[in-house]
Image 1 (cartoon, rainbow, N blue to C red):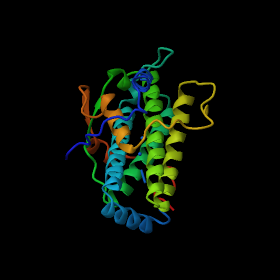
Image 2: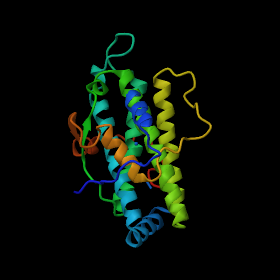
Image 3: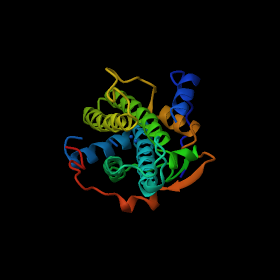
Image 4: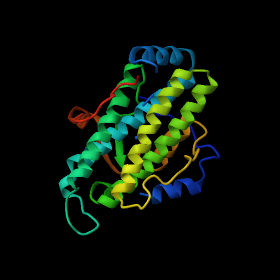
Length: 244
């Protein structure tokens, strides 16, 4: 599938990218079927909506993949105290996050989204071996996903697609929960440390460009594939797996 070729806007500064890299998941109705119908109709009318949902599906697939790799490798992670293995509560958190990202992906693709790629890269090998690096990376990516959904909500509002604005906000809220849990895993004193999210991107295409620059898409790091992890998603304890 062709990749998005947009370039970062002036809002995405070199400092932003350095901060993100140094710190080292996007799903979009009133009812399930009404929302899918609205998404499909909007995509048919506007190429920009198609771009938004395609990029969102790509990011959700990436989140499912990276989380799946972390869950699979959980016993081998090196913790800050020198011990080995992700703690069971952290594995539970990762499984729940993967479940929600898979729910976002399934909804988007059912609505007609086509991911730009289903193969991703691990730009820093420590993401797969060190607990601190893993959760710093999750914090970084979730911050980007939240900002991307903020951009999507603004774009949908400009199109007067209020039902799609609602979905973008619903998903962005879940991504914010994932970031707070990552910060909690890192031992941050304030896992919920922001009063307002930072508007990092002018549009969703900027978010895709940022992920490419950070090496998660089309990078030189080891490759991981969505298809290797999607079938193993664990929905235990999860509810509201489709929008209402």
